[in-house]
Amino acid sequence: MSLVVIGTVAFDAIETPFGKTDKIVGGAATYASLAASYFYDKTKIVAVVGDDFHKEDIEDIKNHGIDVEGLQIKKGEKSFFWAGKYHNDMNSRDTLATELNVLADFDPIIPESYQDCEYLMLGNLTPQIQKTVIERMHKRPKLIVMDTMNFWMDIAMDDLLETVKLVDVLTINDAEARQLSGEYSLVKAAQKILEMGPKYLIIKKGEHGALLFHEDQIFSAPALPLAEVFDPTGAGDTFAGGFIGYLAKVGTINFSNMKNAIIFGSALASFCVEKFGTERLKDLKQDEISERVKQFVSLSSFVI
Amino acid sequence: MSLVVIGTVAFDAIETPFGKTDKIVGGAATYASLAASYFYDKTKIVAVVGDDFHKEDIEDIKNHGIDVEGLQIKKGEKSFFWAGKYHNDMNSRDTLATELNVLADFDPIIPESYQDCEYLMLGNLTPQIQKTVIERMHKRPKLIVMDTMNFWMDIAMDDLLETVKLVDVLTINDAEARQLSGEYSLVKAAQKILEMGPKYLIIKKGEHGALLFHEDQIFSAPALPLAEVFDPTGAGDTFAGGFIGYLAKVGTINFSNMKNAIIFGSALASFCVEKFGTERLKDLKQDEISERVKQFVSLSSFVI
Image (cartoon, rainbow over all chains, first blue to last red; front, side, top):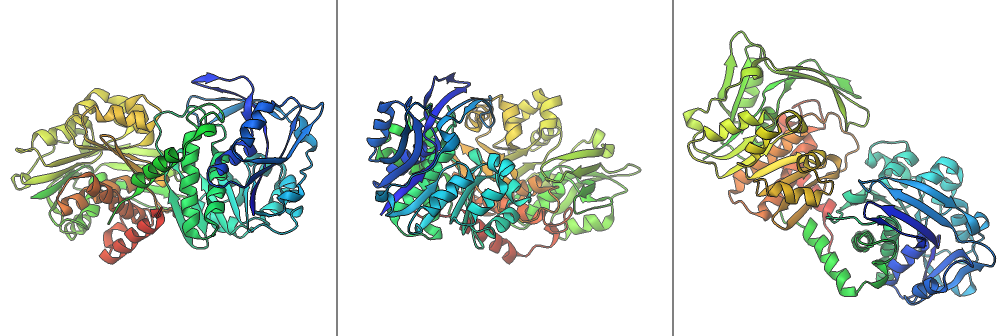
């Protein structure tokens, strides 16, 4: 039994109103696997980096008990690099550079030891690669969660729809749900998307929380109101990783556990944005997480 | 003991993607008093109309047990009129016409029989008139709730700040909270606004729900995800009226009752938007309201 996370492991250079970084570790698989590792100790990565990637950064990942056998290191090649600058409202950003490098011809190799995968997190990548990973699993995992973004809807909608068909849970933001469905109302959008394949849809609304749709049930999760968002990079990946990590831990897939998984995922994402990159996410303590989850409970509970 | 609502009683002409109306009854005091009347049977209006206002529309209000002694009818004058057209997303609208008419020199008269007022709802009007109403109460009401909007922040910020000082609860939307405080983070905005006078701040976020701030406590209320919003006109006033009506009914002001009041106010607002104008709000049944509140509970509850 294991949880396999596929996605980018990469360098980011980030600028926010609070400061800027040189190249630091980023990538969907990095954030998601770190988040999952707080709940589940059999988390494994499938990704690719160049030999410019720092050994210490891989050690950091391994130190969280994350299996990196599926992390390919390409000699003489460079890691994926993204540079971006957030606007003052932190809700929008400009991409300053995107260098695909090793990602350009990424062929995801699934080590034999990963074939016990029960939980599969498809971090944001081309839908074609996400689909390949599903196909390379000898046995269909118990739960497949897919994250994606508007970029793939713009340039690879057919591939995206093919992959969406195969997954159990899709996580996208509200604008993406509208784009994917052609419906403005999120309720109608969810109805259409649930007909495309996924049994569960999570619509992420950033500072407004998240909505979970399943059949005719809806759950509205709050976001923790924060005085300061230092760096939003990776928050969505952290959410997804925490979400699937929590489900792998509890082991039973139902609406009630999905709701809690969203709260735990949101709690981890609320830490992620407190510092640059993975800095805050790398050294969380279990009691900090419990305390944060308690804040979510008190934030949204009422008794009528 | 009574609940006094001050605000506009007016004509609206509304256009939405679903259709358009001729002049129909609208106004902040109309929506708020109708909403409050479902919880509290001693609701009283202070407002002004012209003699073009229809007797049947006043009868409709009276039929909800609402006292209209404070509703002035100006002979030979015309009622306040607003015409607007909503965009396809229903989140933005163009104002097509605003005719102040009787509102231009509105002098709010508080009948002697209203001086038992314990709950005062200051619906959206010039901050100067809202302040006058507070001053004309012989005894300060137990709870004063003030609604306002960006328009007054643009043209009468000093007056607005004077009135804000005097109230217990301020209800504004997220953009208005940012404008009033000069802070983008809603947590920081709330901290600043709570220093301006109010003990409680409600930030309305439309389809994203509402936030209640009080000292260091925060409550995040969900909005009911709706497949169709037919006409958003009056939703904010309905929310405020339901909110204060519920508090008048329970009679004790504390954070826990405030949270429930927000849920009841949100439930009434979710009905309001189902039809044009006050149509849906005029003939609600108590069991419909209870059923809707149950939906809010199931929407946002989780057990960790």
